[in-house]
Length: 239
View 1: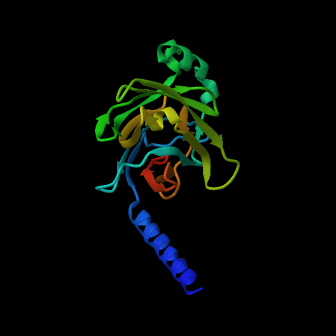
View 2: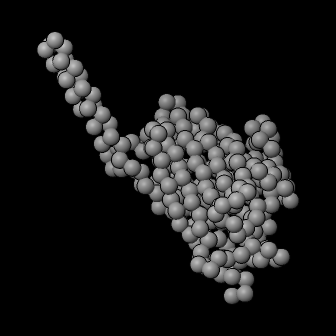
């Protein structure tokens, strides 16, 4: 019996010893976000103002640890604007997958993203073109040249929320071919992008705080996540 108790204690101590380093080996990744709405003078419900959103995201991975791979992400936007995808020229995932961005109508492209990502210890530079696919969907066509050529279309879901603080939730899942490429994990370092065309995105007001709030969350393949909450300045239509 004493031997069994000793074995049980030793096993428990080993489990704790293994668990503690695993927590220590996964310090949180943080993000630095800079966002801008252009122009920042708001429209009104009767006279909305078309805008572009420009943003950059830097992922600060803990020094000495492997950068984390993003599995999915979402962003929340306030009740001071509209998304009018149905009123603009569209492209489809089928066209992008089969023939690439050049086959889409020129005016269906609504944005782009550039930046740096890690492919193990090498920095590579994906090209992302964003296309309109209606009021509930945008399409991000990603071209990655290193460590090998990969072309993938990511559906970006746009959901209008019926109530609460937020009006729109935008979300996407990174497909497996962009998470691991020829056995090499692909992790973000910094990304810069702009989205908007005409009145595709429009503002309808500026709150008393003179700030448009937003929130973004990235979910990593190791089960952790990082959330960033912030706001950008706005000016009321009468200002």
